[in-house]
Image 1 (cartoon, rainbow over the protein chains, first blue to last red):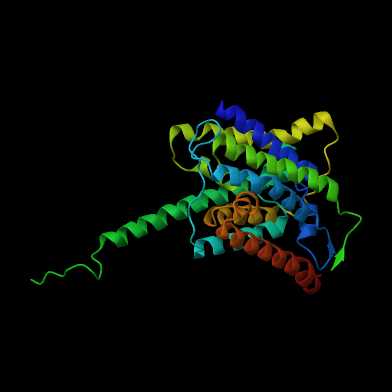
Image 2: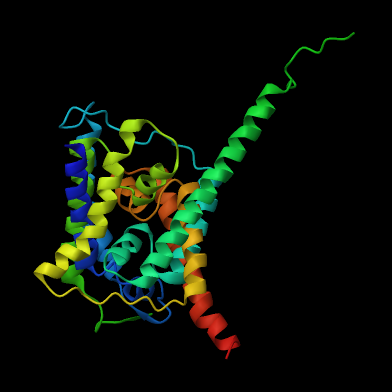
Length: 157
Length: 148
């Protein structure tokens, strides 16, 4: 049942991207180019998505479980750290190079664009690279936490 | 700044945006999940709980099926990828790595995160729009004048 709902919701999301014009990289790049011929459509898309999203998340925030009695998996992180900023900055550079972010990339792939496939494969490679990097980082963190720290009592022999 | 009125499409942007918002609203209210595409796809690439895969695969298949369904009902609007293959690969790698490192992309931070008024998502959205603007400026207006 969850899979069926998720499929329908993904379909709706994709139709929204197509109708809004956001699956067209040329249109997205025209938004990111105010020094050229600026197309503000992306701002309208965000504003209207938020007009529905804000009340929905407000409603969701007051509930412990979803309408289908599932745990609300709302992110709890609050800290603005280096990962958030550096990651978003890198993402923005990639977005600016091609005008494609993950959602539209998958839609372009579905539309049969050969370049859409190229983008999606590179996207998956980038995500796998991150998964490897993340494992390495957490292993290093663990190793540090196992070492005696400054607060540990030194035994003198 | 010159607004390109010829190509500005406020009505279809409004309609499409409402659908995107509705999709994010349904996923959180019905399933308790965030409609962040990079998070949904990224979750497929790591070892997780067995029951955590099906809904992710189904959502991704829905996105991929959207242009197929659209084509049955109407003419699919043009999607023009004018970027060359080498740049496209670099772009994909950066989008994939960066969105995972920053815990979200245009959908997760830009729509869901801003919808729940998250300060983290506001920072992320401003940063990626900022670096996107800068990248396009450098590529189109600086490098284009230096390189023939």
